[in-house]
View 1 (cartoon, rainbow, N blue to C red):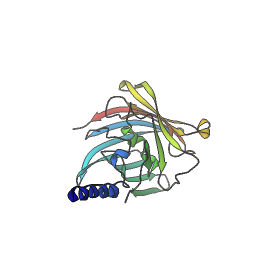
View 2: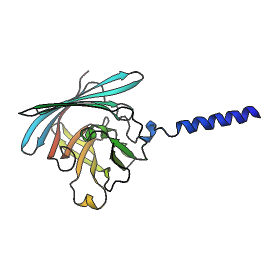
View 3: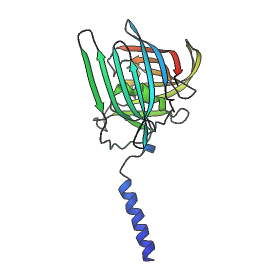
View 4: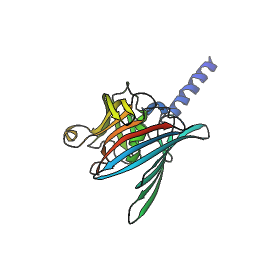
Length: 235
């Protein structure tokens, strides 16, 4: 009898210790299974300027976990993202912005992450990674995911969400591609006035980005359009 009581108390204490910490199950994004060697070419237009963007993906290992290293290069910006493969969470972002008068180099590392995620909610450390991590949207399951940012208060007046809309057929240089459409925007009253951002991902895995209509960055930044030119997997 004493043994059973001790065992119950041990299990209860173990659960109490573990409960406050986040688990991967609390993060609604999932692994889209991007293949090693994926290479995608896009046309990007911002205001009256057009350029080519080339993105490459390799899969790396860090201890016991796998990581996606995604490299994006264009004439105005180079960016390397490291994402945790199991849930598309941000590990690091290295950005080089190239202007006629200066080159800006910045590095963001996510350290000591202890955030607790509510159901259907994620937190972003960098707005620029949004189009990448939402390849892991659970298409066909969760219809809306709340987007929050580190450093903001829980009871903020304005909230931002990604909403699943529909399946559209998008015409590209590689033919017609069936795509899941996600709409990003402010919730509530202000959402009726502020512009939406729309992203189309291929219905077929690994749910690569096919078209983007939105902004370069947060609300107030210039408008941007991206369209798929070519999709390859280089072995």
